[in-house]
Length: 196
Image (tube, rainbow, N blue to C red; front, side, top):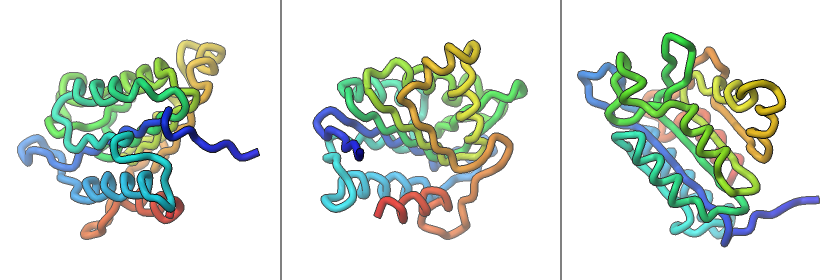
């Protein structure tokens, strides 16, 4: 039996980091901005989507993690479906933990300048939404699946992940592909083709 979302009780938060200071060592990702626009268009289209532009928050080039937290807090009224998408640089610290880049991220100061994936995971777990969908288009994004499935042991991890569906652009130890000059990153392009 197909289950359709309740548009009035659903929200989307689309996050993208595309511009970085050259001195910080992260190359800009121009396609990320188009990823956000393309995905918002698909989610709000009368033929492919179910949401209004008001229900679809677009967060382009956040500077600090609190901006992401505020965007997620504004989506707390989602009791049916919460759709969260991130596109940008995925970075890994010396302990193997995944961080999502922000426009102010400095690779040698991840804990203080990037968004720890664990913080995003905890926000998703706390959401009142019956279904939470997380899509990550970044390098090393497969680590998110490991993190969603292993939280303080198998039983606790199953409770935390119930109702959450995670899709990633790559495995835990691989990079994602953003073809030079392409409108979208490779993964989001494929996602948009499927949605359309």
